[in-house]
Length: 245
Image 1 (cartoon, helix red, strand yellow):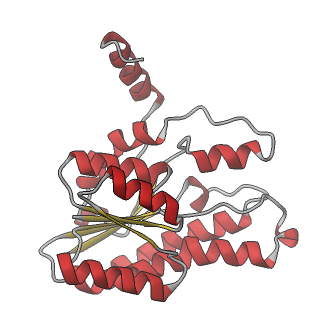
Image 2 (tube, one colour):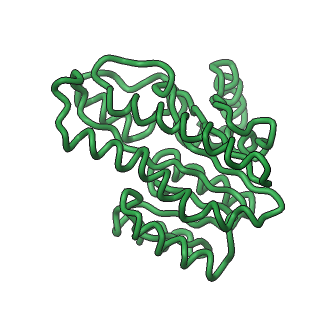
Image 3 (cartoon, one colour):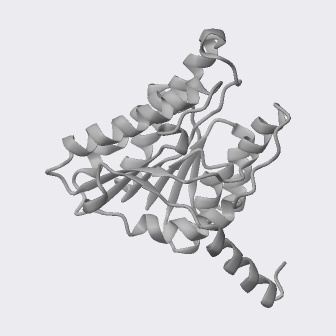
């Protein structure tokens, strides 16, 4: 069983598909009620809820329902995040900075607070906090996102120390550049082209087996899980040979 935040779009949606194919029971959340309804119709065997992870009470109530009916998840994937307008630090609106911190950092903490105590009773468990290449590499105009993803990395390292004697592993994950709708829309708003990178579904097919292989030796570490250009080229060639364009 696994829990995924930001499950209706991008990487979260692709993770849902891959974990479902592997037979996992998936519980996921996102903010938009309509998107959650569509996902519930498509995947009636799983459980989805409209939750704003920046609001501790909403996360706690959602977690309590899952824990009460199904017990703790073996895998917790803190994927949900937002971008804010690209601007120099001194011009970042207070509301934009707060929004990035509320979702990208406090949202992760709220989810950890809600699920980790129950997960500590498991014989083995994995927590994956999605960081970014912008968690260690910095770019002008992207202060809120860089700060928030750096914070996720620091949070992961602290949590790993706190869970050292437990059965849980906690890993910060850098997925590389993934051609999500959110990233495409963000770049387009500044007249920048979409990245030459893998789609969320391509990324998830490559990444999920590697996520499942994470364990105690990885705890507290930042792991980059992204297909190389060579891997993508081989995969594309194989699809073409199989008649799948």
